Image 1: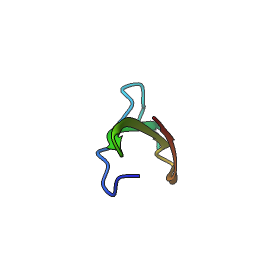
Image 2: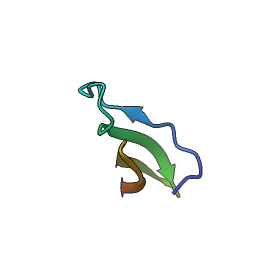
Image 3: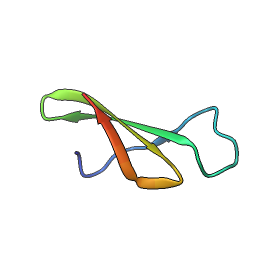
Length: 48
């Protein structure tokens, strides 16, 4: 996974802390999308 990701919160997120966050990147030569919940940012799901 890239060392620094630019996370964006969902526009459907209220003031609560359990929001979906997404970060696009390039992993190797392929585009990737990283997903996490803001209440547990240590767990990241990555799709390529």
